[in-house]
Amino acid sequence: MRIEMAISLLLRSAGIILFGVMSVSGCNYSPMGKTAAPSLPVVLVEDKSAVLATIRDDEKPFSEDFRIAFAGKGGGVAYISKKGDKLYVVHNARPGRLYEGIGDVSLSPDGRRIVYTAIAEGKWRVVVDGKEEDTFDVFERPKFSPDGKHVACQGRKGDLWHLVVDGKMNAGAKTRYPEYAFSGDSAHIVYLDKFGEKHKGSLVVSDIAFKSKQIIDAAATSMTLNDDRTAVAAVSKDSADKESVIQIDLAKPDAITRGAAYDKVQWLGFAPKGRALAYVGERQGRMYGVFNGQEELLPEGVTPVTLVINQAGKSVGVLMSANNTIYLYEMFRNSGRKGNAYDEAEWLVYSSDGAVSALAARKGKSWSVVVNGKDGPKFDRVVSPKFSSDGKYLVYRARKDGKRFVVVADASGKVLRQHSAYEQVFDVQFTSDGKSAAYGVKDGNKLIWKVEKLEK
Image 1 (cartoon, one colour):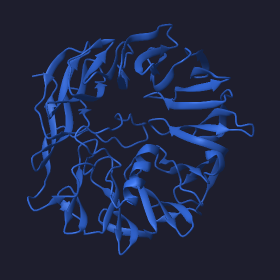
Image 2 (cartoon, rainbow, N blue to C red; image 1 turned 135 degrees about the vertical axis):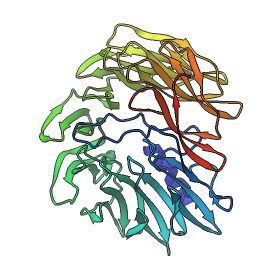
Image 3 (cartoon, rainbow, N blue to C red; image 1 turned 60 degrees about the horizontal axis):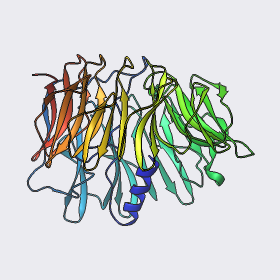
Image 4 (cartoon, rainbow, N blue to C red; image 1 turned 90 degrees about the vertical axis):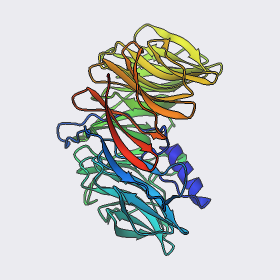
């Protein structure tokens, strides 16, 4: 997120508007689907194909990249078009008003609602469902609550930055809020406040009206929430510059657990479900993998790139960088290095039973999905492999000879089906019955939600 925000600000300062809280390129980078807590509304994946919008011939997209966003569950789509020297957002085939510039755009989980930032008469404002709500010197990073009923954004007025939820703003700070998120019940907002010297600030939990807030830690450097947003983990720095990981239950924020102290903590992340936590701690020049409080010494001369918890296997997969190559290393399983080394590797995932790993990897100019150490078919690019909930299918997006499409494989990586090719293909979900793949595509001027059987 920090990289994306930095790119957004650089482009904005150059007069280029970046459209993109949600991924928007042909093979977009979107996070894995979330597992909702029982308290959250269930937003089912749309299980029928539908044309969500048609780009008119007289519409002029403002850029070939960063211009289309499909809601993850298939209920909506948005894009930016240009008329003369003005820009406007089209949401579910409904065009909005013209603006001097369009900033960040976000769709609600079900795709029915939209929020974005825009410039009119030299002022930034937030636009919710077509209605302008607030005016600030700068507005950025709007987002919906999990239930889709609330909108949060941050903006600057004069010398102060504020968090704004449904038009109500907090007291403000002199620095931008590097991270903030709604809780799973949509009743609270968690954020890093007054981020100052040595890149640390206060970890705060507040109600969304900002009437009551609680400072959890006064020296936090980063934070992350688990997938159902019921727990928060943060890196905390003490007066001696030692770092440790604190963890709280949002239902009981007074009960804080704290891990061991390290010279540095990085790659902090929760498991796909629940509250299992993993990270890398550095102490006296040596790096340790930490999983639920247990340490494992990592090999010397390597750099962790990605950590993914294998819940069923009670282990942690790490993409390790060494000697200009990347390979899979498994901690807490006594297996160490697993599989070949690659020029690049990313998107590590595990099946729900923990028996199968998959990742996207490149050797030379060719990419493939590697399943349990075995290379799959070669493509020009592959992204976002993911397993079905029963572990029977593995789907990913691929590009070859300029064509983009979805590939369906079995748990061994054997290709079962290659779906039709389109100009652009967006993140893939599984329908609730587990029998179909659902995703957005751009097919000429049509923006379509496609639902296709995993096997013919």
